[in-house]
Length: 158
Length: 158
Length: 158
Image (cartoon, rainbow over the protein chains, first blue to last red):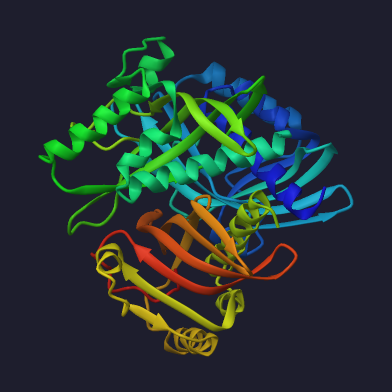
């Protein structure tokens, strides 16, 4: 893939990823990742400091699947949905079969009988593996949220 | 058009569509649609239930033109403008000359002497007809707004 | 470059531009411009009236560099960052080596220990010079902010 094709393939991945979550197809969410993936959610400040722990931390596709199962079984959260708005990938470099991309996002939250509200802004720091023509899987995604002030209600994946 | 070209052509359509509305070129708005188009605005909950009526409902390009004329003549609304932010198309499939796409959007409203404010988030559910090289017209657009809480001021098209 | 390639190259420029600012790499910001560039920030109302002065006005790359130096030295502002969300370019036309594009954006502001908040929405009105394969520099950027209500804190570039 040439640079513009990669750029577009990344943006297409982001779009289908966000859509799966926003349409409550959470079981499809782990399928965007490689088996040996890394996924975490952290804050800008912690990311700058090199702290890796994060608020959410999964280091395999199996852990992502467990997370979804947990969400389905718990069901104790106030009903809400997200709307992912994803900007164009800001930097994209391919080395071998790995593409590095950073992509700004804004996620809105919709709670029953309320207008949409801004939930969080941030940036995906990704390593994506090329697995076929125009096909990418997420090998590593660090979701860096701009604010350190997190709502306790971080149940649905970002 | 290959999948990436279609993806890009759809995003280009969304961009010029939003721009026409935001620049108050409402007379250009019906020109994005086919003559026998369908356009409606509804809520996520009603869309999930399969209710088709919607808050706004037009089943021809002529009705869209009437809507614009009505807006121009009425002019009773508090002056305001929109700013459309459109994410990348989330799913794009071509069958024959029809492309199906779903695309998240956020629309901000600007009222005189006020800062921009989030008006609505949602998703375009589109059937787009390929009418030429890189050219698409909207055959069917269902504007699914995330929240059921609508401002009464839904005059300008989304 | 064909129209779709141009469209994509413009969106890629916007993405890296926003990222440089949001990652506090302000020294990289003037490098997105040609030496004889024009850059201004103005409001929708003033832009409609043809007023060119704007809130910020720079007519060379040197002035942009001075602006960054001033920001670095002053350092009197409350610490804050931006998050640029950039929509797809709405209109793109190439004449010779110049591409005209208008692109909606939303910028969020992050102040220490606060959630992200919407800072400003608007539209980039650009003239971009093709300087190589898939390479563009900004010859003229007028940042048209939707609202005339400006926060006094307009230090970081938009």
